[in-house]
Image (cartoon, rainbow, N blue to C red; front, side, top):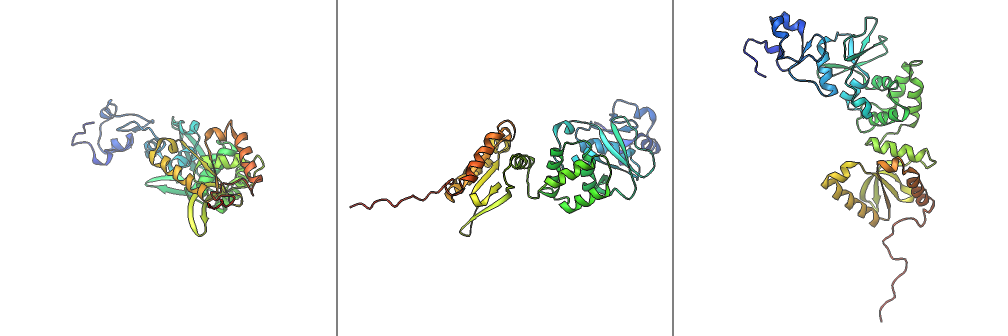
Amino acid sequence: MHVDATFPMALRGRPFRVREALHRGVSAGRLRSRAFLRPFHGIRAWTRPQTHDERARAVQPRLRPDQAFSHTTAAAILGFPLPRRLERDPRVHVTTIGTDQALRVRGTIGHRAHRGRLQVVHSGTAALTHPADTFIALATLLSRDELIVVGDAIIGWLGWCDHAELVAAARRYRGARGIRRVRAALAEMRPGSRSPGETRLRLALTRRGLPQPALNHDVVVDGRWVACVDLAYPDARVAIEYESDLHRTDDRTFRKDITRGEHLKDAGWWLLRATADDVGPAIEALVARVRRLLDGVSTGRHDPRPTRRPASSR
């Protein structure tokens, strides 16, 4: 879009409020032109916001100092793994801290929170609810398993909080809506997961009576590092890898997976590969395979060594 030299520099390249533009000398007629997009009431933008982050930035000029992005909006900006139905939801969540009125703008969802209970962090210039508070808020929108996936990410590969911080946050929200779901999720969360698929696989195994596996376990044999595997039962030398589509579509990842599998076999380990189907409709078959290997710990493993010495030639 062409911008002439008279347009205020401070408004270029970012969403801005109509009130601010008028204050800077831009005419009302110019602001009504089709040159600008109108993503929210009272806001003009140069490009159409597509992502959660872009939509939040477009709403930001409307926010007061006592307001912060929250719920799925804060979660998306913080990188939480959300289910697709929430990733596709374009609405922006904003929480007002204190007694003032919640935000009422079409395309947004306004919430209110008690002052002193909720903490605020910043991503660039955007105010967000703290990752622990965001986790608690998501309990009203997610199922227990979806909340466990998010919790594993927070205390695992994202590293925003540890388990104790989330427990402390749950205590602050005693009696709040969804807090029972939060407590149930906290009981099943485990540090060490590196993907939503790994979390779902772990839950599927343990809820069918299998023991808790070690997460992202380093296989070391005779002081030599062999591989890091997603889930492991070290005593039985059983490793389970969750294979997302990346493992199939990325050539480098595919070759690396093959090499790792062969190294594990050489070290005397069983390697099982699980996909989304194995965590879904084929889960019972996967559980049966794992259980057979764990029950046959003395014999159910790859061992490249011959069972008897070959007869010497004469």
